[in-house]
Amino acid sequence: MIRKRCRVISIYHIRNALHDTIDRSAYSFADVLRSKLIFMFEIKEKLQTGGF
Amino acid sequence: MSTEKKLIDKLTPEQEAKIPEYLEKYKKIGLSTGPTDKGKAEAAVRRAYEYMHKKDGSCVPNPEFIWEGSPRAGQRLAAQYAKGDENVTTEEIQAQASMASYGSFEAYWVSTYDFIAKELPVEKDELCDIVVEIVETCGVYWSFEDLVIMTPKPLEIHLKGDKLHNDSGSAMSYPDGNCVYAIDGEIKASLMEIAIAKRVSEEEETVATGKKAKGKAKKGA
Image 1 (cartoon, one colour):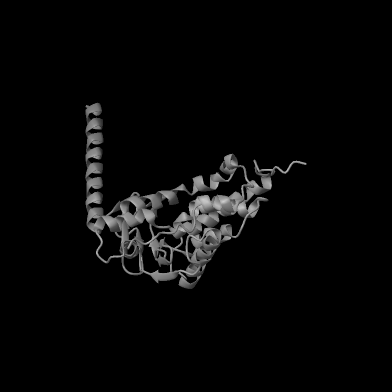
Image 2 (tube, helix red, strand yellow):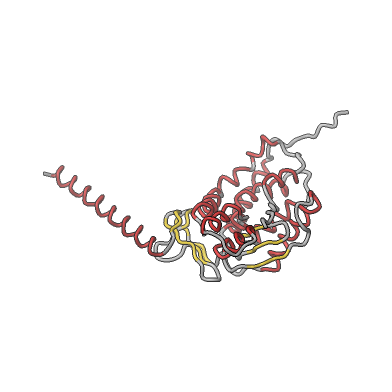
């Protein structure tokens, strides 16, 4: 029996939760945060591809 | 009268001034280690299930939680549960790494949305707070329709600059003894591989230093 997965949080869900009150093209103004924390994405990516 | 929403398209200086505060907060969350409060972690994920259940019925509102001692142990169980069979291949286990939610390691993108939700005059619902709670409290986890396989945050994280690195031990370790080995951000399978990589790098350095010295000697001749 294949068990169904459930993605409980994602960027897609979050953007919907913000009810489109922010200009989608303007997310970049807060994206400075993400760009400065990009090393965390790199750690996550390495774990995703290199395993635990 | 126009019913068109007025969208935010720039930050005020006051809003911009708040960015370093969020940067600091999320750096701490992403690199947080130590004992995981299982009750708080489960409560955060349960809130997300309740939210999604109400939203689209894609999951039960109150899932079962199973804890493993590390992501390595968690991914095996996730592979078994996904397949509905205890017998899983190495490939099936490894494939779980890309299907996990990374808890505190998701801090890099959650920071942006937390900032938007808290500092800007946007309409929002409870999901923004739920997501913040998840990255604050959870390690890596696998979410199924009715069950969540949870794992704790690491007990320690070693970095060189911004990359996972420890050339004399594990770069991350977990309560069940499982570890992640890495040099300069590259994941290695074992301490033996770390030792080999270190040896190769030292040899390369020796060769490079020797070449430089020879070059200088030639110039001087």
